[in-house]
Length: 364
Image (cartoon, rainbow, N blue to C red; front, side, top):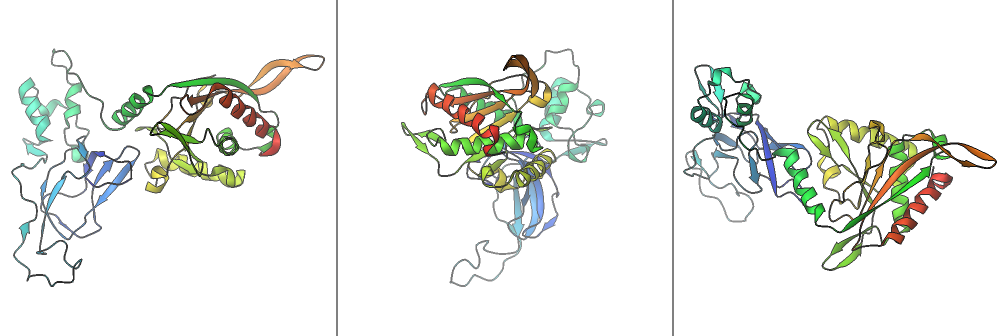
C-alpha cells in the first residue's frame, strides 16, 4: 500500500484493474484504493508480471503492506540507483515470495467470489448463486452476504472505508475540549455581491482568521502554535461520505475566482476526481454549510489539530427590530466551534464580530 499523503497511515482497497498473469510497465494503473480522503489510482512501480494478488475489495491495509507481488525480469529493482554495475539478468523470478496464498476471486459454477466471502457462505449455508454481487467484474464481496436472509441474527459489522475514517476523526474530536458560539449574522449587504454563500463565507472566514491569528492555530505539545497561512477545509457531501478538500488562502483571490474554484472542487469531489494536493494541503479550519438542506443551526465538530470550525445554517428572511418598528432582514445563524485550549469564548465572539464586519461590505 503506497503512502499517498503525509497523513495517510492506511488505505481501503477498492478494485483491481489488472489480473494475475498480466504484464505491467512502470506507470500502468493496476488498482484503485481509497485513502482517508479520496479514491486514488495505484500505478506499477516496476516492469514485470503480476504473479499474485493479495488485497481484496474493502480490505483495510496499512501503508507499506503488500497488495500484490510482481515477477520482474530485472535482477535488481534498484538498478541504476548506485554507481556499481548490476549483475547480468536472471530468469524471471518473484521478488517478494511469501507463503500467503493469492486472494483472488474464485469462480466455480459460474459464480465469482472473493475467498473470504466463499468461506463465510459455506459456513452459513448460503448459495452464492442467489447472492447479488457488487464487486468488480460481478464478484461477490464479503459485504454482499449481509443482504441474504439466513434466519440468523445479523453479524456485527465494523465500519469500513469512508465511514471508518470519519469514525476515527470524530473519536479524536471527542477528546478535544471544545465549545460552540452561535450568532445571527445579517446578509443584506453581502447578498448584493451575487455570489454563493459558501464562497462568501469561505473568503470571510479566512479573512477573519487572518485578523485573529490566535484562533488560526493548533494545540501542540502543551501550547498553541499559530499557522503562517489559512487553509479552509470545505466539507463536501458525496456518495462515498464526507470529503474535505482544502482551499489555501482563499481570501487572497477575487470572489469571482473563488466561486469558480469552489464549484470546480465540489464537482470533482463528488465524482472522485480530486487531486492529491487538494486533500493533503494543511487545513487550519473547516467550513460546513447545511443551509441548503433546510438546517437552521448546528454544531460542526472540530477536526484535530484544527482549532476552529464554522457551520452555516439556512439563509432566510427573519423578523428583526428596525427604526420605527419591526421588519425583515436576510439572516443566517452561524456556529463557531473552538478548541478551548487554544482560545476562550470572548476570543470566538470577537472573531464572529469580525465576520459580521466583513459581511457588511469590506470584503464582499
